[in-house]
Length: 264
Ligand SMILES: C[S@@+](CC[C@H](N)C(=O)[O-])C[C@H]1O[C@@H](n2cnc3c(N)ncnc32)[C@H](O)[C@@H]1O
Image (cartoon, rainbow, N blue to C red; front, side):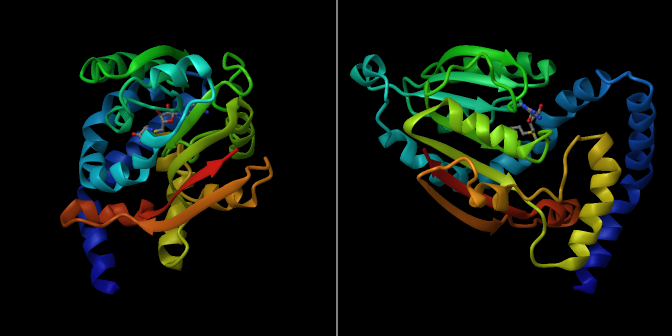
């Protein structure tokens, strides 16, 4: 354990001043109302920063989404075509395109408009997906998406950032057709190591709050399990993402994850 802590502190050292300076800067910008700089900054750094994460976990994610290809649409027209309608919330630059079955029709609700350009670039690499709409808006209030209208909802690492997880889940439930499925993959509050939880609290009040708008201590797994919306079935597993060498050891702060499928 102490070796791991030393390795993490060592890996953190060259970044400490940049991260602290960045957080203070964004705190000041946030306080004085210049709030569009953070989304721009986040969209710029997210893709190069998290590509490693997505490459490392690709085969696990592939397995998680695999059953989607067997889903039969509730919409008779789509069913005839062998297609399904998917809604992804908070897709960022579109890392999940590759997991969607051919002929899927995709709508996304993304709060950060600065991701739109990267998203459509990535979509061009996946012509088997038909893009319906890119809606700039909040997952907690998807008024542009009708009730009971989608077969599948997807979120990956989004519930850590929404303003209200409960409201986002209510909206997911509302838009799903009966029998529709919510596939989620989220990093969650540390459940094993109290020292990691301590740092998660610290980071969530500073760097992660102002730089990334993300709560490392979110309890999305518990809230989904509590099932206030009334899903007919929730299958969920907690898991840990593997830590790599060097700076990748910092992943310990968001290594606790939960994935699952909730059925309406
Ligand atoms: C950590 S990124 C994850 C991006 C992508 N899902 C992935 O797995 O790479 C969080 C994403 O959620 C979006 N987001 C944050 N709050 C949101 C909200 N309330 N409604 C919709 N999207 C939101 C962010 O703009 C960002 O694109």
